[in-house]
Length: 83
Image (cartoon, rainbow, N blue to C red; front, top):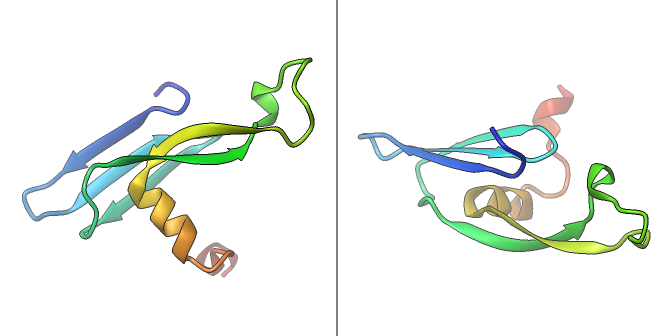
């Protein structure tokens, strides 16, 4: 996959598989979401920094709506990864 590429796969059961290549591959399965994209603002990644970029500069990034919703409503920390 290319950097920041988004792939959607839908099954006959109504499940949506979202694959997004950010700094790592992110996968999310949902029976609620549709294959939609949204814009979000975030800090520029280290690997995207240029010599003329200011520290903590922000950029607009297209991300899957399902991942944006998950990030928004998860309560800050994903405790599942800490078990």
